[in-house]
Length: 156
Image (cartoon, rainbow, N blue to C red; front, side, top):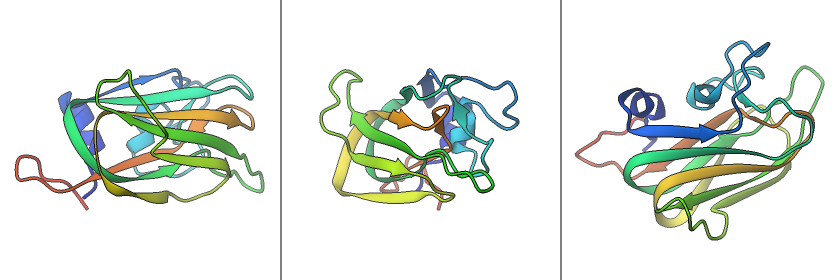
């Protein structure tokens, strides 16, 4: 089931830590645009620097058992394609990250790409590290999935 990131963020159940905070001239952009459900070009988190790495981390108030994720890095704009590479990490303590849960190399798309984990993975932190970017680093969408629980219903 899809975790309702907007509701969790609104209630303090998840916090964002990022260097992708640029909003000037990016209508609909900013750190919370990453889970607004919109894959339009400007609806993303941006770092205002060309061809550098960037990091976007979610810190949950409680441990989650993740089953997969959906991600859309920087989307194409008109005829332009803007490939990026990124690794997604999960951690229980925010210090030990281990191997990436998912990796993407030179991806340029207009849709969310889904990855299902081989087994549920415990996490309080999820970090997207954009390692290579054409132009400004951007994270357009991030969806996280877990098994549904009685305590906190998930959305489809």
